Length: 393
Image (cartoon, rainbow, N blue to C red; front, side, top):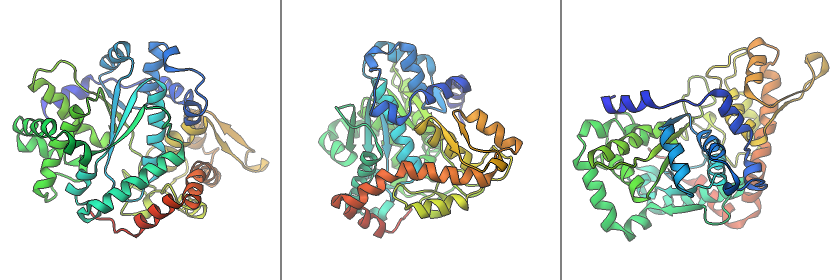
């Protein structure tokens, strides 16, 4: 890590755990989308900040975020994804939750469908037509799960179409970023593609970070709202601002990465179906995957089942219900993660009681998606085609 990147990290401020929990509890997906009791114009600056900040495990920088929300009525947030295969629950539910929080606080969210990037990274064998089908399928999932797409606060943009239409703006920007950075600095960004510096990269994959960095400025983004795995290229964008003496840097809001369901899996993998729950998985599939998931008794750290509850179930429902017999402790409803974690660590909450409750909650979230892909012919056809595609790296 170079000095500038280390400086950015050391000066970033972590949100107090209690404040983050309160912010998440106060704004479930349901509350923010279908019953917006408080509009962004009625919120105080502190309320907006708390909601937006609750999305990120890390924020670079909090004072800049506060200043942005104070001065700009509708900040632009950038999020992006490679259409690379079926959608797992982290990409489907977490993104819907985060987008709904951002729009509830008055932000505009530009979701960058990175079809050219997926081709550069050899996803779907580099077949752009297949990549486009996958992109359409992913949009159908977000519609079905409850991402608030009313009004014009969320915009889906296809990278190939946008870049082609404004090539005279985009490519000089990419070239300038490439000129101002040495190859080792670009190689340190390989994590954004799911690669490591030790991988044998194609020339296309070396070009990829320069393009993703350019996207931030091309989309006029105030906030980069991406996962922790995308952090290095977002820091690169801030460093580029120093290079060109630009005062207003993009704010980095990096959300937590959910682990895979098996022991030692730091993130979900599309190449390993057992590591994640897919958005259109049937109820029985969800039950089996959670039943087999790594969930050691009395261990909270790096426990994927507890992470699902913390980052998906509690933010969605504002509660987590355990149903069990009286001799096993009786029913219990948790409204915050700290209480649940304490009970689990003490042994008063056992995996045999936690797992069925988690399966029930996840299945309840996913049911509207299943219904959509069962009853909507366009969605059904898209899913059939995507399932037939071979996942490539």
